[in-house]
Image (cartoon, rainbow, N blue to C red; front, side, top):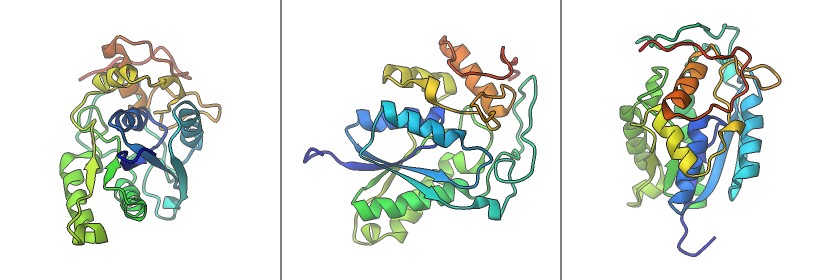
Length: 238
């Protein structure tokens, strides 16, 4: 690491958004220390995607943290609950069953602790509040509140330091995110967005995440490199 290069902790899920943020952090000159989580999710495809992403865009350190959110369940991603599928996507104001209670708070808490250990003042994650599934822990208010808490809860904060939580995609739509990633060299063919992919890694094409991904590529005017089980994609209704 160059003497002037700062360390950043990145939450890397294997999805389109966090992969874009990986390249954003690198473009800003950070040495990236990535955290991924095996948290009892219903499929391992996203962690396989992480391996492919990092083979193309290596980081200084990558750690896979083992936790078990299936102990609580309560989500289609960590419990015996079907992932909702629909032919035509209509956004809802309800919190969907794919929301994992506490997940981003837990992940950020790990990132906060790791950042303090390695002497980093910067955490990056790929949440956004434009094209998303109405998750409460993807909102600007949540990120601001967590950052405030982190600066109260750490030795760095108590001693007058400042821990910054970066959510550079927060106000971007999916098409803008994709265009940004392409400009930074992201290979989206190795990313996974689907909530219910096949064991072979094919996306279902009908869950909320697949709808948003497909519409994002369509609006961006870029061919979607994803392998879909059900393709062509559904129509959007906004």
